[in-house]
Amino acid sequence: DSYLHASRQNFDSEQTTQPQQRRRREMSTLAQWVSEHGVKFHEHIQLTSNNDETNEEEDWSMELTQSCTRGTTLLTVPKSLVLSSNHILTNELAQLSSSPSLKNMLLQGYEQHLPEFSLLYKLLLEKSKQSSSTWYNWILSLPTAASSTSSTLYMNDVESSCLPSFALSLLQYEREKLHVFRDALYQICNSNSNSGIDLDDESIEWAYYIVTTR
Image 1 (cartoon, rainbow, N blue to C red):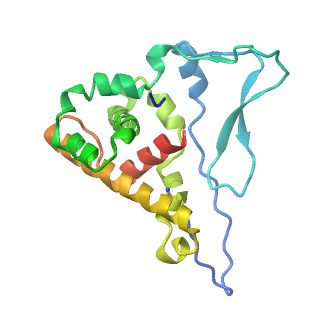
Image 2: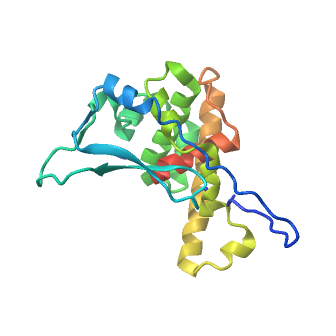
């Protein structure tokens, strides 16, 4: 169960550049959303923004304001709110288990990545529902599509040639996996015209980034 085009800037010695404003994540409604859906935080837990100005986008984390004893429950999330790959595969994608798209993934040796694919599919599906999705406010709080461009997946040939051989092989594997995921999404959504999922590269790459970094 399973519960990236590098950002570049051209520099000119005769041109001065203004610092770019950091991209802000929509966190204002998240606290209300988690409260309404039964998420429980320990009283000494708080959300904190990373103040590192070198980051292009705000980075958030949870921290304790006071020490707690070992074994203290800090966060409780209702099971109904968990995006579970097992649940998605046995319910929402069950009717597609024999589809050519998923069979193709298995034939290419990506069976172990079906949990990731199911989460990618579910995330795009819920995003397409916008405010009617249970997870709408949580999705808004996630890193933006632009953040996915920081992934090593988008290294150019010169950059990737500088990687050690093992790191380069991992990069090539991730690129192939994204390609297989994209093809499977195309086939699934084309066979289900009512899915409403955005199939543009930016949306798919954003979802892939979220699933592989959460």
